[in-house]
Length: 252
Image (cartoon, rainbow, N blue to C red; front, side, top):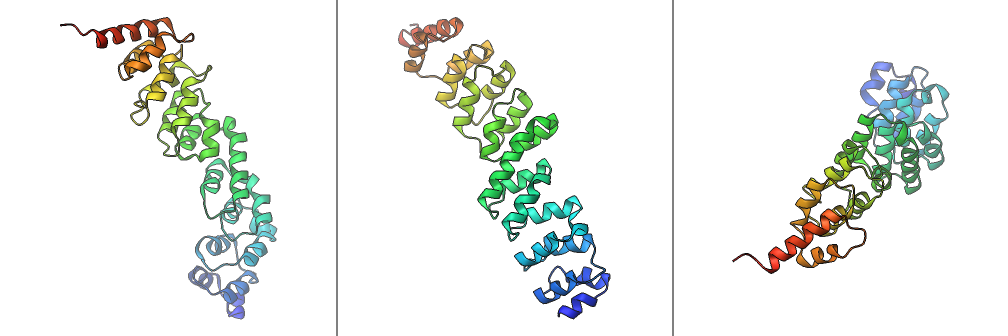
C-alpha cells in the first residue's frame, strides 16, 4: 500500500486519498507529485489521518505555505498541540471563531483563538464585527458586549450564547450609547426580563420613550423602589410614581 501511494498519479491520488488507508497515505506523502490541493484533500476528507501524518505535513514548508493548509491543520482535532498552537496566530477572524467554537479541539487552543479574536476585534470592519457577534463564543461575547455600535449589539442579541448577565452589563454601562440601549429595549428575547427592564429605565441615557414603555412592565414594588433611587432620572421617577398611583387608586 505504501508503494501504491508513493507511485500513484495525481489523478489516482485525487480519487483515493479521501478514503485511503494509512499506509497508502504514508506513501502519498512521499510521492513527489503530491501538491497542496491533494494535501488539503487528506487533511479535510480522510477521517483516518493520524497525528504523526499531520505533523509530517506541517514540516513541509511548501505545503504549509498556503493559508488554507495552515487553517486545516489548526482545525483538525488530531493535530499535535504544539503544531496547532504555533499556527493559530496566522488564522483570519472567521477561522479563529471556528477554532474557538470547535469542541473537538484542545481547550488551550480554543482559548488561544478567543484571545487572538479579542485582540483583533478593533481591526475588523463593521460588517465583520456584526458577523462575528452572531457566532461569538462566551469569551468573545465578553468583549463584544462593550461595543458602541447598535448594529453589533443587535447581532450579538441574536447569538444564543448571550445570557441575561451580558445584557445587564450593556444596559447598566455608563458609556453605553442611547442607540445601543434602544436596541436592547427592543429585543424580543430579553426586553421582558424584569432585571433588564429595571437596569434600562435607571440608565440616564436610555431614550425616554423606551424607558417609559418599559416602566409599564415593572411590578408595583419595583416602581416604588425606582421612585426613591438616587441615580434614577427624574422623568422615570415621576412616571413610576404616576403608574403606582394609578394602580393603587384606579379611577372609578
